[in-house]
Structure formats: structure tokens, C-alpha cells
Image 1 (cartoon, rainbow, N blue to C red):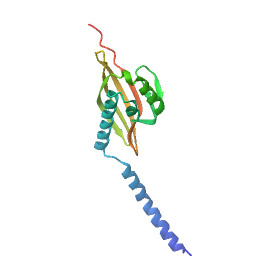
Image 2: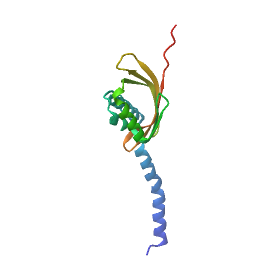
Image 3: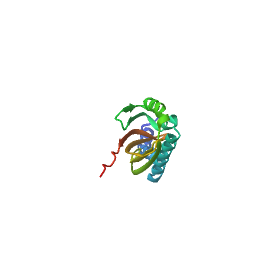
Image 4: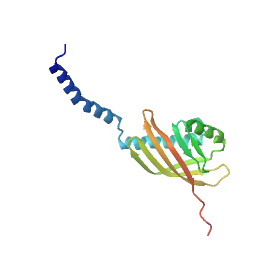
Length: 158
């Protein structure tokens, strides 16, 4: 039979240890900013490499299952399957892509990456667009959660 004194001691120990256990879980979940920035840079490089290889599955695996992509033409793709389908149907026409990030902001397990995407179509020329990507980090690393591309209008002739 457990005495009241033992119960109280056990309860006191449990109450004292709970915040430490919770703090350990939170601290273990944190990633240093430098590591997060390096991981996001790697993801960006993987995206460009897969795009330039016309690897639709390689691109799609970088998106979260519940991702949303708003394309330059205004079309909206909801979810991994829609993004994969669109990538597969358009992969043959992908121009060469160069991605240049201007800013990455990390807020815990969420990050915002914005920059310039420069595309070089097979027929020549150059097309530029601004991009904004929201990323989420889970146990499998960073994934694209939201992605939008806004084409830059050509400069007016003078």
C-alpha cells in the first residue's frame, strides 16, 4: 500500500521533472539558423537540378503533401498529386532554370525564401520571374508548403 507521503513525493518529483522533459523535447526540436539556411539552400539547388533534368518526380518530392503552388499564369495547384501531375505533363517543355535567392527568413520550423528565377527557353532568350516560397520543416527535413511565381514584365522600349 502506497502511503500518502510516498504519493506526495512521487507527485512532487513528477511535477519537478515534467518541465525539464518538455524543455528537452523543445530544445531537441530546434535547429541552428546556420543549419536551417544551409538545408534550405540545398533544397533550392535540388529543385533547380531536378527542374533542369526535367525530373518531375524529383521536383514534386520537395513539396509537402498539402502544398499549394500558384503558377505564373495564375493557375493554382492544390496538393502533392496535383503538383506532380502538372510537373509530369509540362516537364518536356521546362526551360533551363537558375534560382537566385534574395532573402531567407527562418521562424522556427517555418521559413520564407524569396528571390529571382531566371529561365532560358530552348529557343533562346531569357524570362525572369520573382518567386516566394514558404517552407515547413518536419521530421523529414524542409518541404515546400506554398510557392508562387510572378513573371517580370519586360522593360519598355525607349
